Image (cartoon, rainbow, N blue to C red; front, top):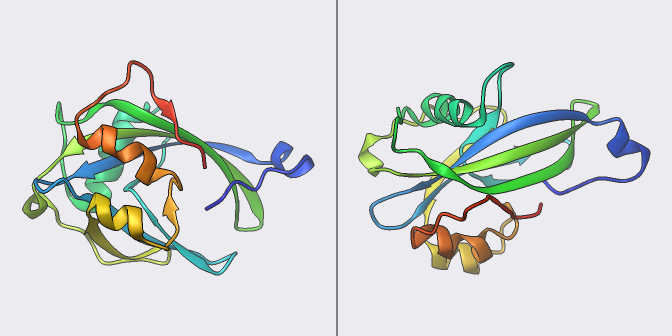
Amino acid sequence: MEDDRSGDRAASAVVRPAARVILIDEDDRVFLFHGRDVERQRTFWIMPGGGLEPGEDAAAGARRELREETGLVLGADLRPPVWTRVHTYPWVGGLIEQHETYFVAHVQRDEMTVPPGDDYTFEHRWWSLDEIRRTAELLVPRRMAEFLPAVLSGEIPPFPIDVGS
């Protein structure tokens, strides 16, 4: 989902706060959902997460989304935010300007219970850093391969890093 800001289009976008989780397994692989952008007829790989509910902070939203999408219940396992990302995209005839905060969690693969896909996501898998670096598929955020090594090595920046679109 690329940034589609252009003049008046961005001005009319609805702002949507969101939270995502960089899930890392015992083999330093990252969990991604394969999603589809029906409006632009393309697919992409994205980390678990989504929009915040009214009054919900980013950490609570990340925990809720993770529970809904993977069955994982995280408490103190959720690390502080490491990335941020803002992007604008078409959705159901309008524009959404999504402000994402990315958290980190280390998990055991066998703790997850991912429900069947839906209209938005249709498969999931664990990716190694090497696979992320080599793929020609669209990853979100696009510069995931650039920023992921620091996360995998356990670095938590003092302030979340803007990872672009």
